[in-house]
Every structure is written in C-alpha cells, then in structure tokens.
Image (cartoon, rainbow, N blue to C red; front, side, top):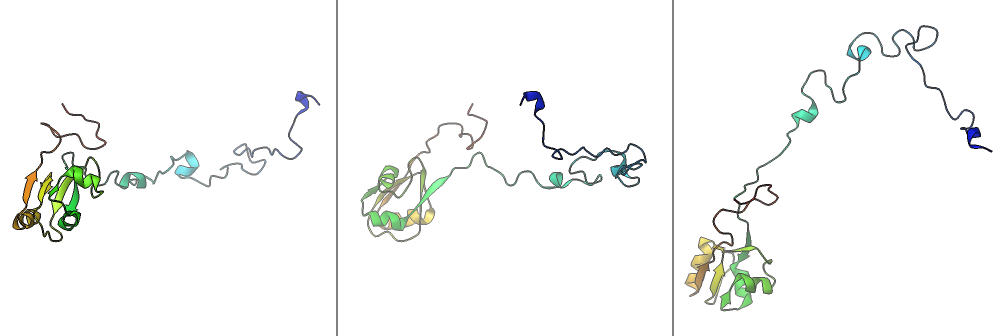
Length: 162
C-alpha cells in the first residue's frame, strides 16, 4: 500500500448539501431559510436580540466598591486577652500565642470581662474595651499604623504610592 492509495472507507465521507442552486433538487429557491425577514437575507450576529439591549449588556459588569483607604483590623476580644493571664499584651505576644495572625493590625473589642490589670498595646481599641481595661486597673497604648505619610494603595491596585 502506498500513501497515494490512502482514502477513507466508502460511505464514511458524505458530500455537503449544496443549497440555493436552483429548483432541480431540494434546497432551491429560499434554500431552507424560509421566506423574507432578516434571517432569510443575511447572517445575524450571535446574541443579537433584534435591536433590544442584549442580555450581556443589560447585566451589570461590576458589583460593589473597593475603598482604597480601608484599614483592616484583626479583632481580639477581652475574654481572649483575659484567658492569657499575662500582665502585658502586645501584637507580637498575640501572634506567638496563636490568637492573631502575623502582620495584621490588632483591634481590641469589648466582648467578655477582664479581671486583672493588663497593659494592652494595640493599633486600635473600642471605647467599651478601653473602659473595661482601665476599670480593671490596666493601661491602653495605641500603636501607630505601620505606613508613613500617604496611605498605601488598596490590595490588588495598579497604583502605587507617590
């Protein structure tokens, strides 16, 4: 057998129907397109809805708003600070004890009670938490946010600090 003798088996390949070639066979005159109208005359784009605003354009593209100046805090409550039983609490200690994640800003919130005097250092403290800590004889120190001057760009933003 030679390369020039290779061919598909008989009946495997069917000839395409040639429409619009006269009335001699099926598919003459209107060529299977029906009579008149846009579909009979030319091709219509995919998703075309007859001039009505197409679905893909009616559906909103984006949802919501990403605030580039948002400061995200990791919440730590009074009951978790009290359960440590320490006299001083800093973000580094909270990370070591597994209460907070490394590199996050800490905000102390007022859920629970604090029984002993604790010196708390955090990036932010709620009013109720501050009152509870000072009532128990403790002290609150607000740490400065890690960025300097201009606020950092939002996560995933294409803009950088100037």
